[in-house]
Length: 338
Image (cartoon, rainbow, N blue to C red; front, side, top):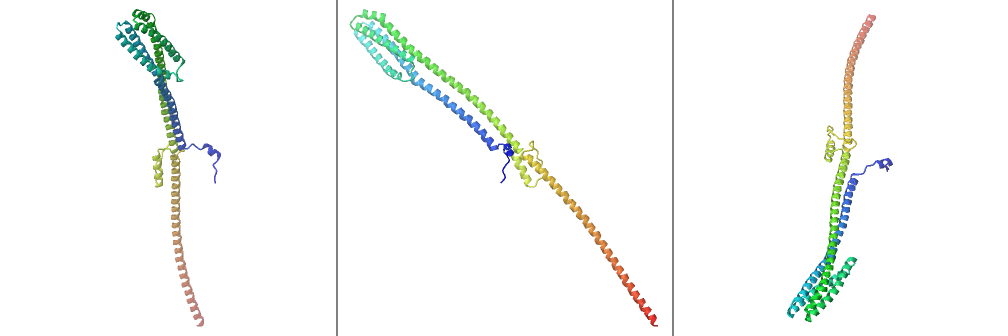
């Protein structure tokens, strides 16, 4: 089993899947961060609006009910003192009783709200001062009513002008102070909500711009990596390999990245073409050598045939000479015998 060298492991590039995964993880992490910040901001806005709706707005509404009750009771008391018959007095006093009940209907939930931990010390002080002037005004109002019922209209009017009118004015002043305080608190809370919303909007725009920039950078980086690795479009690489598999060695491959797949394919294609050219040249040389050898063999065969014919002629001549010699020998023998 071959173990890759340390230098190879150190120089091994990060895979395409890893690069795409890192890019995707970066974008997802940014989205998660934006979501977390958005949840926190929305939670703050929601809690602030809930506090406004459940506390400050209700306190202000009950205080406004206080003001209406106090104002209308002051008018009813004035009318009760100014009228001359007991029937009208009873009517105005009944109106005051109804208005006092309306006041109590708002005072009870107001006290319940002020038992919650979110109420400030200033609010408690304002409500305490309202209750103090309430007790003082109710006592002076009772005195005026008693004088009027006793028929002392002049005394009731004098007490109304001397003390009760001022008590009602102070009562209204303190109720208005609570209303103004709650209005300022609501305005401050809504300003915080608006500021938070504006900051979140700016953060969203900034995060969106950063996400777009990050996506562009990652896309360019991955595209460059792919092009550097493949050397061309994936379709072009597949087409070149397919044509090479079909035996097309004449295709023209161009790439700006010599170390890419297309660059290696171009180099391999060039070397393969050179090898095939060399093989063809060697085959031609072998063919030429075979032709020369065949011609030489034919020449040798012809010379052998010529030599064979000449040898046959020599043998024939020798045979003829031998016959002649034999014939001469026979003649010589015959001559000797004679």
